[in-house]
Length: 465
Ligand SMILES: NC(=O)c1ccc[n+]([C@@H]2O[C@H](COP(=O)([O-])OP(=O)(O)OC[C@H]3O[C@@H](n4cnc5c(N)ncnc54)[C@H](O)[C@@H]3O)[C@@H](O)[C@H]2O)c1
Image 1 (cartoon, protein in one colour):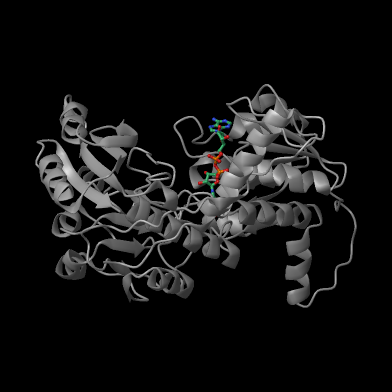
Image 2 (cartoon, rainbow, N blue to C red):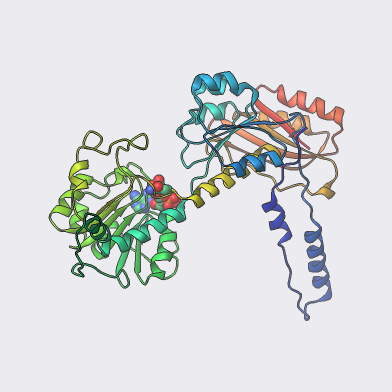
């Protein structure tokens, strides 16, 4: 049996309930509120344990932070940690003994690996993307996959702020000149960003963070998004991309790569931009038509650009960034007031730490409480925590194929008991049901487990108590 898995945030949010007492309120209402307050502050979430897994084994690869290792060990997991990734063959040999695996982007979890992972319950991608995992095969095997898609939003927004200033002050040109021994003090074509208009394309996690930072610098912020979004501060949503392009002194892109956003900034859009404007792309490499941007820079229509993401990027550090990779690379490298960075928008210590915390918590919450909130390939299901005062409860976590009649079968099995809470949802072929059941004896539990796990749609049935 593994040691408790704790979820501090849930406890805090429950304990945080507070009630203000008005001297004029009727005593009945007052008493009721006070009672609620007392109940809330006494609330203790029950820590659940997987009933049948005797010691959950966790494999952490690719140098996932020592904090995560310590946290998992403190929760009772038996953790194997490696600084390296594993090849498919190495995984095929080792994966069968583990209940959970944490990886970054280099380890590939293929269909063959998933087939060999007979005990695997969950996969944590300690990074932004999940392309390295065969998500459909994992879902069909009843294995949710968690990642951390938005932990680096602030890091990207801060990089853009620095680029706004660096472009408008020609900072990289001056630095380059001085490094090569040339003193060239000048103010021509150098501007403050205060009072200028920033046009943000895509007002999601990054775009909205940036909006707040830019206003603090005294910028006027306009944004364009396909959704109607409540602006932050004094920012203003404009009706079209064209309207944004024609008004902004700086345009910055923060959209995902979709069929609509590929090459969304090309020659016609660049022509709409003000002469002397600046363009920044930290989103995805394909949203910019880079040869068109080169022409706009060479003609002087654009005063500068900062690009962090490219249509084709080198696979590893130390690789060349040249014309073999992208045919315009050498030309772009030689244009003044162009800032080129190797996809580092989200690469900060803080973002790495947040990724570690977020994915570790998701793994613990799934293994200990059954919650799939935030899973990329799975229906998102959760039940509120069980209080220590709620007596003997057993939590059923039942992953099954999404087909007619399953709930009927499961509920027939549960019908002799009091089902306190139940929630199920489906995504594609996969459905997931959680239920809290009261007063189940050890013997009843064994019967229940046999009955539910032998239903024809069953994929994985777990009980937590
Ligand atoms: N450079 C880096 O290191 C780095 C790091 C993190 C994220 N990113 C990239 O930044 C981009 C934005 O990330 P996010 O976390 O803010 O995403 P998000 O999903 O939170 O926001 C994207 C926004 O773009 C909007 N949008 C979608 N299609 C649009 C269109 N055609 N026109 C206008 N708006 C549109 C969406 O409605 C949404 O509000 C993504 O492409 C992401 O991959 C890059």
